[in-house]
Amino acid sequence: MNKLKPALLGGLITGVLSAIPFVNYCCCIWAVGGGLLATFLYVRSSPVPVSTGEGGVVGVLSGVLGSIIYVVIGLPILLLLGTASQFEEGFRRSGVSVPLSGMLFVAVLVLVFVVFLVIFSAIGGLIGVPIFEKRKGQSAPPPPPDLGGPGYGTGM
Image (cartoon, rainbow, N blue to C red; front, side, top):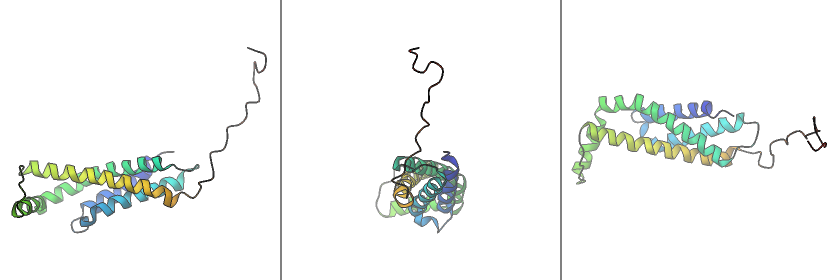
């Protein structure tokens, strides 16, 4: 089963909504939602029951793709609006010593945000399986029995 298509749709939600100013204040909610959406789509298209681990993998993929989308869309917006410098100034005003400044501060800020997107998307993927997977008692159909071919029972 291909995990990339559901992860791409979940990552699109995560990345775009996390990059939009004022909407991105709920950043971790969008990441969890993207992981949930990816898991929902994966469970729906899977012919066999999906394990929680598979949901986590789909969530991580969603977070990675969402992070890439966020960096491509959100970083330019962050720089254009001067949001990074506002963060830096807010830290300094509150008495927090910030050893970084300028673009290095922006790079660290984006890196931390990307890690949070991946972690929260994985959480969304992990909690999505118990919510959406209703085929718990079912298992994959057994393989067809070996009816014997050439050499069956001849000791060869």
